[in-house]
Image 1: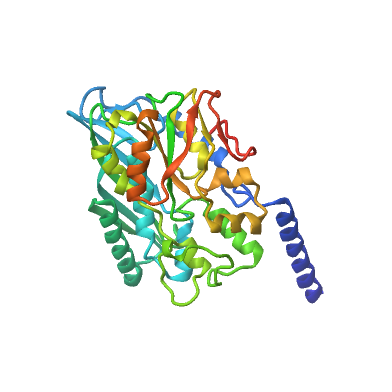
Image 2: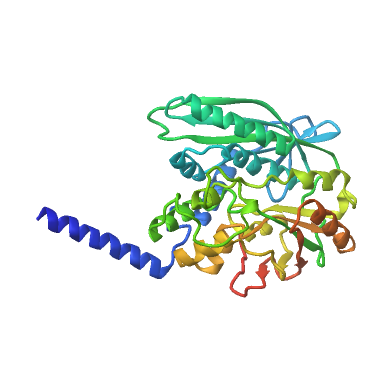
Length: 384
């Protein structure tokens, strides 16, 4: 009976895997329901009530569409704040004992959001939670944060490490970034208009979103993080930590691109006035639907998308993931989108491409009733 039970259980498990693969994997099935998360955030915000500080005083909240970063009053300037974590990408790093990129991931998820409101990131604080302290891990995280500060050009102003046995079972990491901008220089999407041109900036890979689905695909197809990459790719964009063939682990632990260079420079001293930069979108969880956060009536059409990176094609093929689900979950090779006035599009695109090869014009703002449309007909989003 025991042998029969084991064999029957194995058959049932294999049957469920085959059924899941036939039907196609998705993010919700992997444990992350983006729509439900949106409802939860709305419930949280509605429960917060009125701001404590009076409008116009230091520290008072500034109404800001998009919510990539929060602004508060500070004299003639605004302070900008963003907070985020690395997410389940950390589970792969812990499994492989490779933490060199996670501080960069944590930094990127925060400072990239600050750029979207027109702020220059200037400082960062981190929060690390562990079941118990480990000097080796903390040393690796410290080195990673130091490199992250260099790339983002910010000061590490402090942090907190908490040992929480019984609450956390493995490493978790998050942080908060501080930025600033002059009043009047905020980028909110309010100045968007039909005909504005969209410029896409290439990603370095999956970045730090969608990893519940990534891990589900790897598990279901029977691959290992130490397997040699089963697809060709440009290895020069992957930060290696092993010798020999590049592995799936190296590809999926590749750090999130930090866009301070060149986007902060574009905002402060680029080829056009800040007022001609009408919106900036960090393509994170929710994929291209993030664009809908920036205006309440205008839409977006991507007619010349940046090339899809090889790892995304592999995820889609191995998990039988629907195309719309891929663009709803991942950046698909485009990590940031900048909307500029059409009169400045060519000069800004050329300026960016010189500093970040691969940056290119990908589409335009359209008056289509607040939708994201794409060269691929099935990629349509009408809500974030």
